[in-house]
Amino acid sequence: MTIIAFTILGEPASKANSRELVTLRYRDADTGELHRRPRLRKSDKALAYERAALRQIPPMHRVRLTGPVCVTLRIFYATERPDLDESVVLDVLQDRYSYVYRNKERVRELVAKGVYRNDRQVREKHIYHGIDRTNPRTEIVVEALTAQQHALAFECPNPLEA
Image (spheres, rainbow, N blue to C red):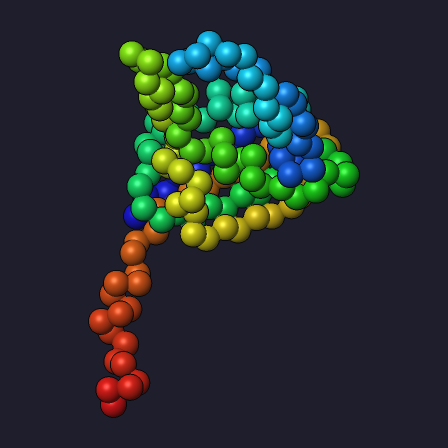
């Protein structure tokens, strides 16, 4: 069983409560026309936390786990004010991609390896809230889960066949 444990210093910003509405301008690749569209984006505080947190993930823990994982987070805030919100931490732990254009085709390219490939792999979460005024941080433990559903399907008799 793979177990990954490390700490990210700093206080995670609430991703849900601090979205900002911005207008994106982009140029159509075929016609060259300028278009605008509204988009919700993370707050500056959430983006700053992501940048700082990404630098703190030890390279040896960027193993790109596949399959289901269990994540335990102990989030220590500096005050009682912030809501408990683990979503920005879960985002930081996944692979990072960027879109680039090659031969007028939009291609998704891996920019940075994550602890796991996608936060949809998180099947079990344990989130704890704590206060540490002098050292806000997030203590992270990620465990690879074994696929148990397949084994259970063959161990449990079907009650309809009895």
